Structures are given as structure tokens and as C-alpha cells.
Image (tube, rainbow, N blue to C red; front, side, top):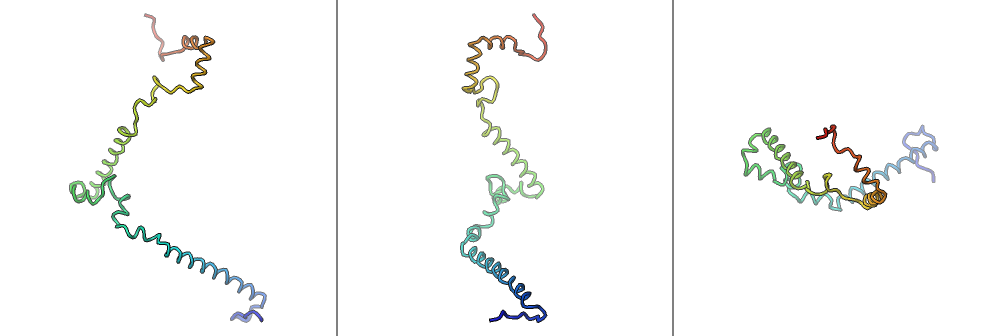
Length: 154
């Protein structure tokens, strides 16, 4: 059988074969997109977010930390009466909660973050022991400068 001729008869049969050769690739792309759309519809990926109320879905972006925004509007109307004032209070509360987290929770006192009591690694203890054996540690401590300004002898 001969290949079907295109509607335009000015195209020679070899050129017509190249023209018709492009159509299956476009059809395959459209078929692939249709299959992907059908698979996404059947998978139910979109149903999980659709089942939740919009206030719950958007709570992460529209609420004070740990406090739902609708509670703010219901129980604290003096904070949310004005949009600009609410934004100001939101920033102030968030800043204070950040400081509180940093200084009250994340800041761990007495965790070797000072010079008086630091962790002595095995390499440090070995090197210090070797200096003590040779007497170099006492010499280093004798000539070590322990003050920035010159001291007067009294």
C-alpha cells in the first residue's frame, strides 16, 4: 500500500513522509500527558488537602506562633482591631518569642562555652602530658603574658 497523500498535493511523497513522521511524536506526548493527568486524578493526592478546612491548611502562614488566628480575633479584639496594629503586635510577639526561645531554651548554661572549663580532648591531654614530662609546660606558663597592659611592680 502507498502512504496516504497529504491534502496539499504540491508536497512530494518523500517530503510527505517526513511531514507525517512528526505526528506520532506529538500524539505520543498528548497521550502521555493524558495518562499522567488520569493517574494524578486517581491517586487522590489532591484529596488530602481538600478534606481539611482552609483555616487549618493556611494556619502555618496566617497565625501567630502556636496560636490560631481565629482565636486572636475572637478573644483579643483589641489586638486585631486595626490591620497595621495587628501586624505590629504580630512582629513584637514573634520577636519576643524568638528571644525567649534563644535565651531560655536554646541557651544551655555551663556547657563548656567559656574559657575556665573547656573539654580537654585526648590529643590535648597527651600533648600537655608530654610538655610536663620535658619541663616545657612550666617554661611556657612562666613566660605567658596574662595581661594586655604592662603591669607596675608593687
